[in-house]
Length: 258
View 1: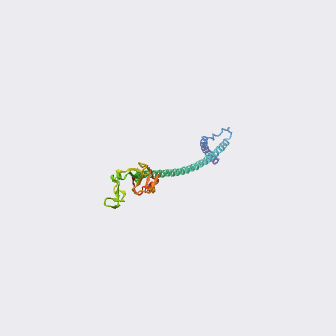
View 2: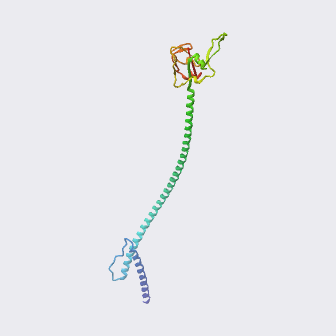
View 3: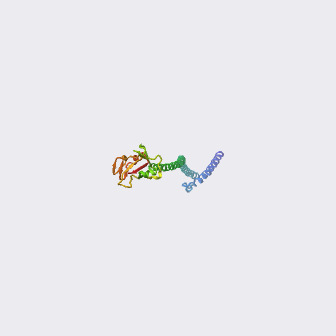
């Protein structure tokens, strides 16, 4: 009897401790959202039956808590996976952003280099343009000088007095020389001539259209057009169709009135 009494007291002590532990668990579970405290039940005459029912109710709530914990763990795992994906995307975007920055920096450097080259080319072009302008002026001056010619019209005596023409050759008959030829002087007096631009002047008028005239300089009547021609003499204006051909023998035209 004493032995049974001792065993009963031991079991009672264990049940008390278990009830205290279960009570703590039940109190903690009751704070979880969706898991309210155990429903109050009407006590029975047997305290042991009440304890068993309370334990079953508590175990049911523990199972619900475990299921909730599993769901939460699954959500946490999914969130971690999503976080890893976002971190990977962020890393990829970071690499792309760095690549874009590097490309932008390279493009900026390339543009700066091109701008420097363009500035140098612009300076070179400006220098070449200046040189071209100078060459154009020089060419225009040369063309003007090349196109410049001189002519003089007068009687034989007048042109001899001015030193434009001289007589050369002929037979010496003691009293006078016959058959002498009129030729341009070796040194022509430029101030006795009238200057013209052969690019613009293609017609030279004679002072008297009724008189005959003769070219004694190196130009040829074959390279000009006149109203009337008799050998090396002509009447009327002297028309020069091909200036280059007419003026090529000499830039000084001497016409003697006959």
